[in-house]
Length: 201
Image 1 (tube, helix red, strand yellow):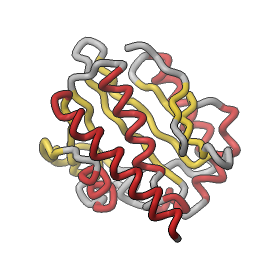
Image 2: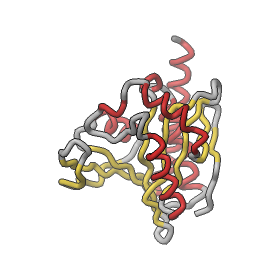
Image 3: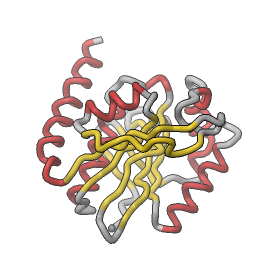
Image 4: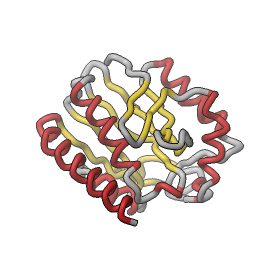
């Protein structure tokens, strides 16, 4: 898969993660104290440097392409997202390890990011399928994944241990290449509607 260092549209810019983003990411994760959510994994400000190091190590190994999410209008860092579990042989990958500052939850930002990532996954990387995974009890994440048109493949029971000692049942969703044209039309409409709503407020 050919690497693309920067993806952008009129709302967001996805830049390859670097230590230059550290301070902005530390500030973003403090918006809503996101690390306190027990059913997901978001780095604390103190752990941010280690998380950047982890993601860049996986990038060097070829299994992850990590991005920093940046607001086009303000230049403010909003969070992180990644192509991960990249299977070069089968042309499959997962979009995940995503989190955003609480201020942009429910806005057009997530739709804008997913549209960029999916568009390049299917149209540039020529993926046959893109996965999304989340905690069975992370209902907000599940609704967000389902709202972009991904379908539930199944649930991996006792899939992984969480940092608080609980066990996670992981919901696995996917979009396949034959669905992409319809999903793209849906996301473009959804993005337009969210932007119009924001302008009216």
